[in-house]
Image (cartoon, rainbow, N blue to C red; front, side):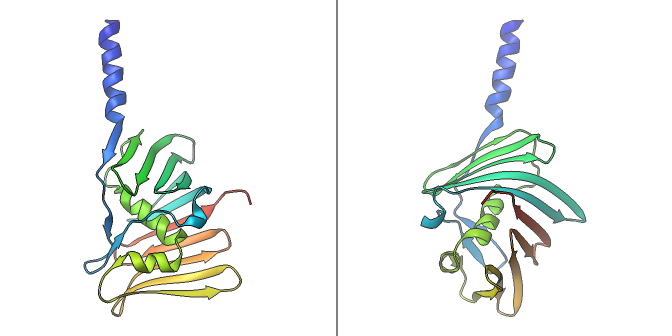
Length: 188
């Protein structure tokens, strides 16, 4: 009986670790793709703690994520605001990503989480180089000292808008109709 229990627990733990196929591109619209890329040199070694609030289909979901940037990888550990572990993700630039899910995340493509973090944190030059489209344009407008606004446009259509205000980022994906508020909880 103990052996049967041990095997069941082992199989459960084994099934919780999943490899996410190496995907370098995320589709932002019908005409615009975005290639995921390694962290810029200025972020290597940086660890952020974020409160992430996602609004989609008239629902708001919140989680706390610790994000660590290293050369050629991004590590994310996420938990609910009540402290329940949700997932651990290690995105690699040069090999298959690894994920451990502690609770089911139906309909969540973790590559979009990585892409959204890049749109908030990567320098404008790197974002522009990662776009795949003949007619997509990224505009960056400084606001006050350290705040800014970014817009991703395809022809005359606004695809995504990101605003940085103090220690918060507001990402609104107009075509996919979701909003993310990222509040940096990291100590300065």
